[in-house]
Image (tube, rainbow, N blue to C red; front, side):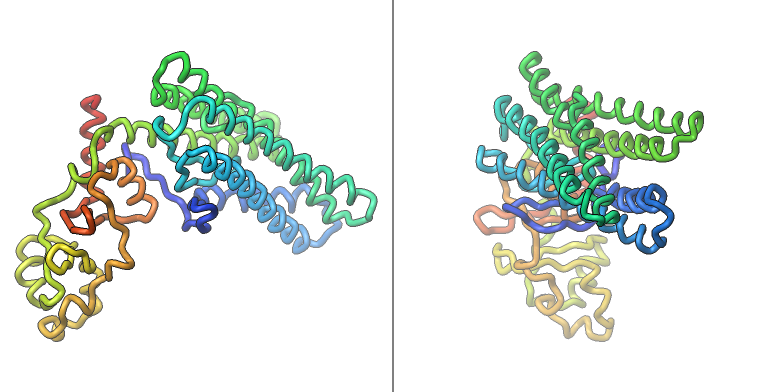
Amino acid sequence: MIFGVKIRVVPHLDRILGVRLQLHRSWYLAFVLGIAIMVTQFPEAYPLWQRVAVGVAADILFLVAVSVREIILNFLAIIRGIPVKRVTLFVFGGVSPITKEDTHPILELLLAAAGLLCNIIIAGIFYGVHSILVNTGSVIIDGLVLWLAFMYFMVALFHFIPVFPLDGGRLLRVLLWKVTGDYERATRIASWAGHWVGLLFIAGGILLLILLRQWFNGLVLVFAGWVLQIAATQSRRQTLLREALQGITARHVIARECPIISHELSLGQLVRDYILVTGQRYFVVADGVKLQGVVTVRNIKPIPKERWDSTPLGEIMTPASELKTAQAEQPAASLLEQMDEFRLDYMPVLEQDKVIGIVFRDSLTRLVKTRAELGK
């Protein structure tokens, strides 16, 4: 929850070129919509199961096309020195948290132009395959490829709209950046444009549904507007988060009062001397100051009470090798993004491999809200 908005994604796909691709939840609806379109738009002479199968195949191929586009753009960004670590994948492409320090106007122009060109090339490839198949008699396969060519051509046109985070919006951001000299302000303006254009799309789609009974066009327009509005909001929230936490590092937000305990301590001692007294639910286990693991209430629950006094924490703790940790000088904004990415509520903070404290997500989000309200 950031500024009252929850941003959730389904589990990550994998790391490609060192970049973690994550599917936004809107893909669930996109898959259902894609199948529904193929079932209703394909000739009814074909059995329902075949039309459903074609819809599933179309969804998968469309996802592959969007992923390929994003992989190409990530590759270009990385070789140009932009440290892309995570990308949220929407149906039109990816959105990644990039700061002013990571990029500059020429790179933004390059990536925007590359994105527009990739869209056109992918749509052209689909149409080229259709041209080859059109006289082969493979009506189902040809129809599938023609639909993909049409949809990706529409995606290519969609990206020319000058609102962020579309490619046209990246061009708009570059222009605003040059005019105002303020990258964050340019991102906010371009993202607000995406937000409002998304709402206009939704309104237009509803009018098509109600007044003209154009179910296909209306649903697609509503869906496109909804996804654009969500993506633009996410981009704006990320900018506000970075602004609110500017100059703050993990060192500034650690909870130093959180005790560091020994792995030799018994579970019974931990419960009696710490948990029942302080109400804390998360403890760092260390050998001196070297991180060994963490113990949470979740680790404790499976252990029968009669075994608490005979169970050392070393047996039930989550080992350090399985933990995500932060560095003392890591920017707080990237730390919060990392915690959101892995859905973590706590994270140990290290300095030269020594534990110096814990960061709590709730404390970070409160700090974001407070600094944002005070205009800091």
